[in-house]
Length: 403
Image 1: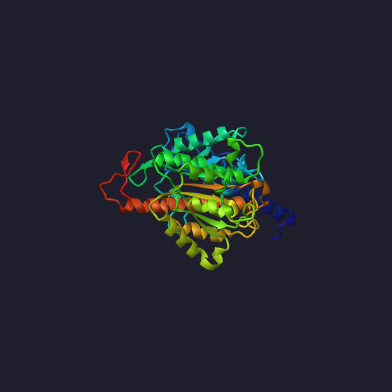
Image 2 (image 1 turned 90 degrees about the horizontal axis):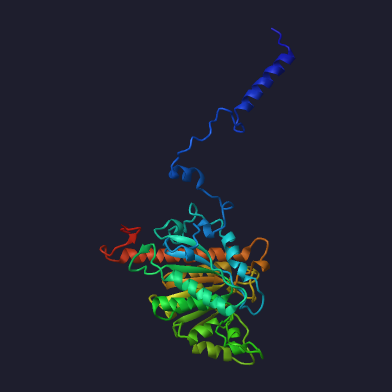
């Protein structure tokens, strides 16, 4: 039987249209509107997921709570921004550091946050980690800014943690700076909360123990003493730093004048100095061992990391860059080895995104440093809780948790 070509063409067209009508591009009229009444669990299953590139920018997509104004929401670890940079001696811009670090942490998510070097996911652990937002710090008055930051850190750090336990007496704060001067209000608040000076483990190209007079200034004022290079000198003189149990790591700074007087000042404040060059002979393991020997594993520690400890060829987005620094792999390896330290507070400072590259490489390193600090906090915390007697209560939301 002869079939006309135009008939075959019509049949093929009809079939193609029919297939297209049932394709995944279609939105058929018979799809009903949602009936409503879905449970919160069902809604979360459908819409609660976020890709790395979606959602409101918080650190690692953590829940955002304005912790300073919401004391009813407890937490164990708080990410707090300190957007302050009016105590710098060279390039400003670190006030935008918290925003940049949060954006760079976008690929850190709870569904892909397992850290294989430690065998845990800090974002799905028993500890409650929140992004506590930023401290609203004045950019016009450094004396007032110092008061604001001290008050904010004290307010948050003195609260009862979500997971109340003998080994977890206070929440821990990871501060995103901001210039390095924010370490002074942090140390003041920790001294009040723990009732003792802190050992300081300080990653930096610079000493930051400089006497304020080392900055030439004929127009002296008490406020001008407070800088991102003098805050540890001030803290030492206030008795906030445990003399003889603190360490610098990654140093490669030029010194003042024509002598080693800056080192003399530093030694009076009780710091061990590890230079950037020392890594060639000591290796990362040797540096870890030297810090642990100096500091110990029981005294309370404040961990302070200036992003300029890294080489500016890798991390250019900072205010006082110094060539010859460590790589991100070296810094991360050292941080991982320092988990035994009793770190009760930490900061990541001096990220100034205006000087960063288009690939946000400085902020990416800062975000990874944050992930490593959180992993170590959770790892040490879980280990401590497993070592206590079973009858010691571990309470989260009023329910005993036998970890």
